[in-house]
Length: 491
Image 1 (tube, one colour):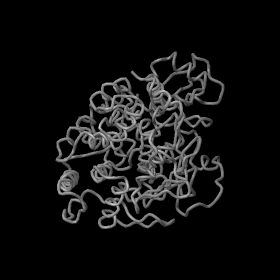
Image 2 (cartoon, helix red, strand yellow):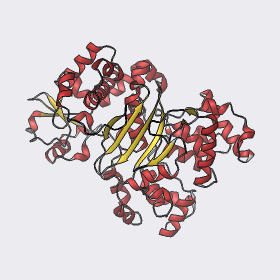
Image 3 (spheres, rainbow, N blue to C red):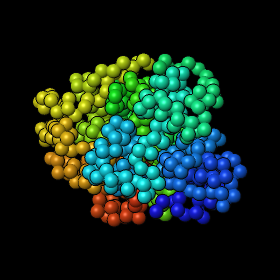
Image 4 (spheres, rainbow, N blue to C red):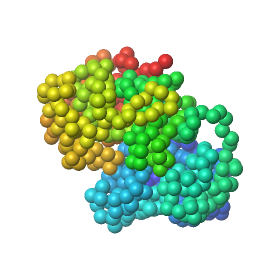
């Protein structure tokens, strides 16, 4: 059962205005007909006037409107969907990726391998809302974002947010926010500065603390030229999206990540935001993670020194799998060189208004057609590479938001040249498994030896059992003991 069923705990969170629980549950106020995040700044209602729901969609289904003070639709997402691999969690990741809007509920069910009825039943039981209602809540949030941060005509916003008609868009906005679209725009603060023409600027919230050093340091140190870069305090990269492509710039700030998006098709906005959040692991619950890791006296000083480390992830699971193979048994610089050659030869060119970025990373279909003899790598790794991209291109191996982590890991280990390190680094950084562990990694073994932990893979794995289900975060703290550039925010 979700946290919303624990009334006493929810009441304590609301009365203390504890922002750590934003996104875990929502408070609906019977006397006013509105719903809030737990940290809403207004005076808390009387306990008898509060009911708790597991999702914004459930609040909307019950007839409640979003609070205009705390804006609950902009809460960080629930950490539940990042730490679980069951049907509901996988469905929520797909809904966030816009699958219901593009393929409908039957498409969602097909991707999950369940019947439509089973998916609807489980989502309703746990979240108080079915997939259509959850997708509708997401559309309304996207609409609000476009209304408040752009000067686009309302008709364009309606279709960009995924609504089938302008009338549905108007009715939904009024129902959810108790304001018309034009009233929402009139209330929005005026933005200063012109910025990049055609770019959307928004704030990505997260639960504090967040340590940006290893997160942005890792992305910058491994950036593939043409696809990624670090510029003026921001990580920038190209995005392959369902309706087109995009370019994003992500800048760490103390209380949010500044996100600047340029999209070839505005219908990709929701998906782009979702993928950027996953890339930066913004829906994690750092307090719960760090509390667990602090129980180990060896890890405790590392956590206390720099709490809130996130796992740097990816915006494209197939891309990361390819890059993991390119990085087998070579330096970070060599892996970047291999990847840059592929990008130049097989990537799709894009136009970057700010310059610097030139291509999308090649799709598996393009890589499956290349001549293996052109790859400057040992023959055995060529076989590993060509087998992977062929399986990805054929659809025999699918790596995505809906992936079942144990099943995907088993499929990867069946491929030639795939050992535990490659499978687990893909599970950790591409699929988002928070418990993926790398006991054979050279950096981990070096850190273990320095800290007095067991340095053999078997003994280290046994010791790491106490870190579960957060071993992927323990990896970040262990890696951070080294002076490698991945651990430092670029100057």
